[in-house]
Length: 352
Image (cartoon, rainbow, N blue to C red; front, side, top):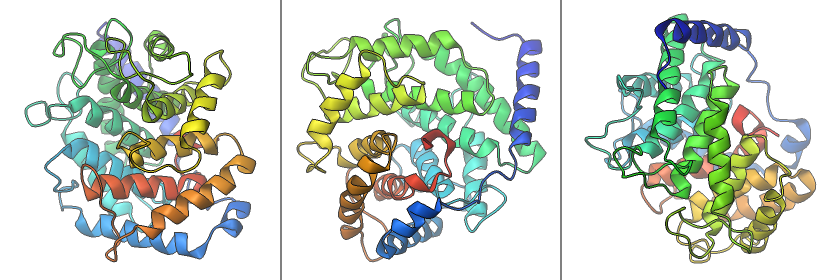
């Protein structure tokens, strides 16, 4: 349901106050116990990758990827926030600010962040953009840009609510444009983006989140895994199950009747750092989310897993600092950086 202009103005002012109150909260450094346990080679790989992203960003704030330009920019920007920089502080402040400006410029009148004329799967970019902008909002020092971000996110949340399918999920495009089709990976992208917005002070309908949670539960198979879609039930997908579990944690669901079964399924399928085939061909997507799941379990499980994960990631880095793989090097590099910096604790959405 559209929000009246008066209510929207009130929401914006509330979010601006909430964002302003958290200025200066970052750049505090990783926890000492994590910093002491980290292999120096991981830090070298991280810095090389961050430098590569900064070097390859265009002056307009995006990366010349051709495929999924909005999603790539949002993911790359999120990876830079993971280092501790903000739009106004840190070695990558300029690049993060450029990314913010680029994503703000992609906001359309109906609330969509992206361009449906050039991106056939625009909900990915929309969800990742909500996540990125919600993470920079609290540290944005320029009042004008902060107001713009609040406005963009307020309308983006409304767009997501309107784009939700009857089953409670999301598809590659809005429900109206996609014949009410939905699937797991785009649904998880929306849930995390919406949760980031809510944490940043942007009002998000509780009904939208509850319907999304019920959608995930409805796609669960007897083995604890999540299937591809509410319409195309079939074998459980490790990647989608890991992503769904991370999204449920973001939504505050840690111990419903479904979560323990999903956790056991993902541990069985993924905890050994499996190869690409076992992860259904989307290794970096799979472990981007499964690493979040393991990190939430505490250091006893996280630290041994972290060592195996980081050693594999760093061993595959190219000399110039990036990684190659499915979709585009920007995508793979951003995913790997988010994982490598996960326990720094700079990104609120991933904190324990």
